[in-house]
Length: 138
Image (cartoon, rainbow, N blue to C red):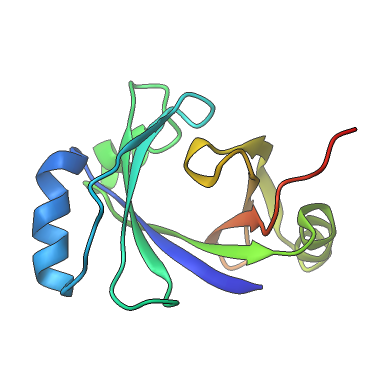
């Protein structure tokens, strides 16, 4: 597993991008992806090449998986995302260690259709798993 990004929930990405970039000394290309599979908008900031990124996450509607987190906690640090070679094997390993599959694998728009899955560890740490490369479907 390799740390890919830390996800931070915000009420409005456009308002948060410049503020986060200044406070972290980070850069952003300004792209915002809308992902109907996840019911969120996302954008990424980079501090150093090859370092993990910071993902800003904005809920789309009240049914978004992060809407409740924003309402009840006001947003903030939400998850860590790890890139993995084999998504299914990593899910099996984490479940055998007491993790709970919170969301089954789905394609993610911001990652060119690579699948992500969500695991809540036994210590209540929310982990997003990102497959390293897209599955080849013949």
